[in-house]
Image 1 (cartoon, rainbow, N blue to C red):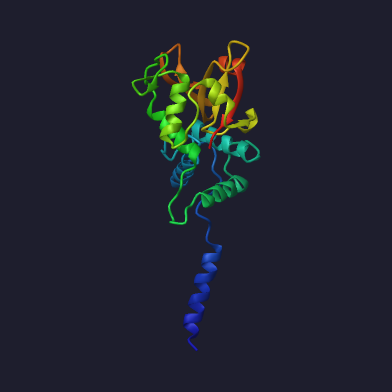
Image 2: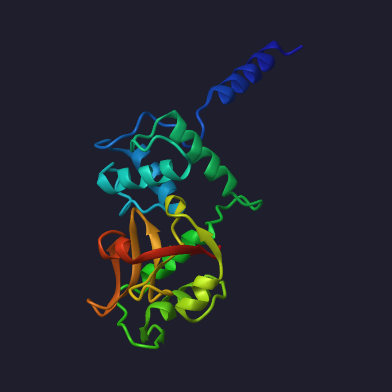
Length: 226
């Protein structure tokens, strides 16, 4: 019997059993730097939580992305990547791997990514193309590019999809607002980190805004189509 081979095999097996998961990392928090932060930022962005870039620096935007993920999965929103948050990252990453071995981005990530391409496109009343959009035309076009057919008007879109509570918002959800006290008169796409993309009347173009102030005052609900 080849005892050297048996011992070598046992050592390899034990090493594999003890090896950290793909996203195992030291405790990461605001101010952390290095490759572990790069991996974290890449994962958060793939899952639809914007870190504002991938630079290996755990800054305020990365912390906000971690908090958004923690809230989504019912964890304490402290912005620190400890064992519980790491477990969620491992679980959501594994479930995002296709049978072909490549990562399949969730539909909501596609929606946000597509919407961001049209930042700065001018507002045009009744517009439905990148030459110019109105609020519902913009949302409909973005969803069409993501392979999803939705209604043309704010009323049509508000009547469809699945209602989502304010506490359960995810990137890619459509946010609706009303200044008339009746049905929706404006809308935008939630992109995470308490922000949305919409056709801004004041800026006369597609822009990112904080989901606060005016938006919270006139917010009437959200719909999910993915």
